[in-house]
Length: 309
Ligand SMILES: C[S@@+](CC[C@H](N)C(=O)[O-])C[C@H]1O[C@@H](n2cnc3c(N)ncnc32)[C@H](O)[C@@H]1O
Image (tube, rainbow, N blue to C red; front, top):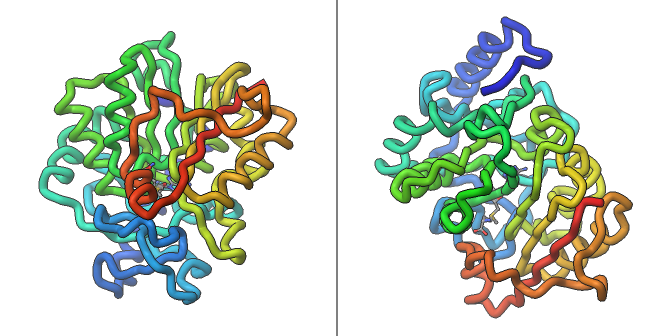
């Protein structure tokens, strides 16, 4: 599936030690870490980051790694990139979420075939990963519970979906859904998309990028944690091949404005809209779980479709 890059034979051991140490340091019970990533439209009933966001300092703390759920290689690792990549946008808050029996079974059975850790230690050979060197690959960052991802993959089997998220129950759910629907064009990455883009994807290897309802980090002091910002766009420009479409959607007005500003200002991207504004919702984007929650709250949804120059 992949070739080694900057790999040291001691890394596996070091990360194992780290995982054991993390286990020793476990203190808080599951599902108790609040976060300021979201704006309350998302209630967290799926184990996601819903919170009214008390003005605590949780989001500023170093993430507390989670306990290992599976033996090495048999499922997603709790902290695949370890601590060797410190300087980056922190767009997510690690959270402990209960994995259902179905999600666990899917992870146990399908992870070795369709899953990979975003460990930042090797470059992915996407042709091998998808079993087809000619398949165009679209990266989806932050698929949540994976329903929309599955729908889009089923509607377009001639495109491979490289789906990445840090959320273990969502990874299990997406694997389960893909298996139930007999899909062979979804692969699931566990970890930070920043590391995936920066360390593991070759130049011009992606035909598209989808970011649907990224955590809006509504408080001003957390805006630096928003994913879509110039530094991120610089990184994404490497793996995105010329002509690749970048499709973002959000129900958070001020984040939509930020996306429009930074994408419009970036020399490597151009708006597909001649008027330089938001795009009509493309028919191929299904309603997502977070979108539904935002709509229930009366939020307007905005799509942006840009092209890599
Ligand atoms: C608000 S949820 C949206 C989920 C889904 N797209 C939807 O619309 O229902 C944002 C998701 O992005 C994931 N996420 C945030 N930052 C990420 C990163 N740097 N790498 C991978 N996933 C990330 C979170 O774990 C979460 O599942």
